[in-house]
Length: 260
Image 1 (cartoon, rainbow, N blue to C red):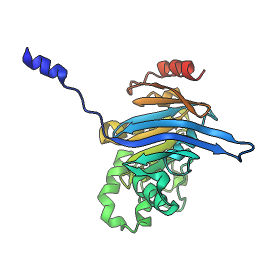
Image 2: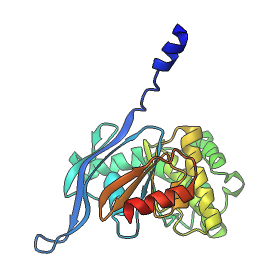
Image 3: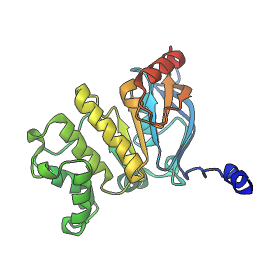
Image 4: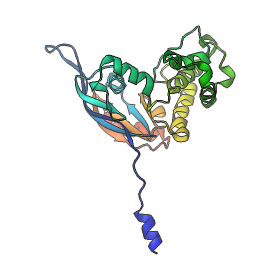
């Protein structure tokens, strides 16, 4: 029975931490009339995990995502990604870091209408001076991953909303970012196309080892995540270990308990 005891003693090592946030606080307005948006938020995210930040409108979840992405600076606290302190960087260095190590997807697709789907995906590399021909295989693989090979020559106006968001996701991944951050990525989509995007994000984590942090108010979307962090009035009020089980009803019930 010694082998069985040894097997029981084995534990799965934790994934390396890719993001750490310590005491993040964001206050808008002056000292006479401050408006707190995020208050003393601390969290860590392991590599290859899918984290959803769930909260109602006005809960501070988009502000928190912007702080994690270095799009906004905190009033207090710090953010480290791959050990790099975003809050200690100059604006220029933070911009370069964000462009090269972070992928960001918004509710609006933010595609350039004059470019094809493929050209929109390649655009971040061109900004960095990379020749499109040198990354042709990489872009081909990304287009296959988001199921847009047959639509790659179409411009945004010829694509559905779901297809445009998949282009935006491929574009966000073209630099092999440490983290993909998504701010209400299905906010402009109907439920059917919205679920396609959530399943794609889950597949990126499960099949490709990506790290995803997504903001949402929808239990149907958050249920795809491994962890769900619940935000209320700018503070973390609890966490739901969804483990990607996609039990939206359970997530909704647990969320109501924490945020109610």
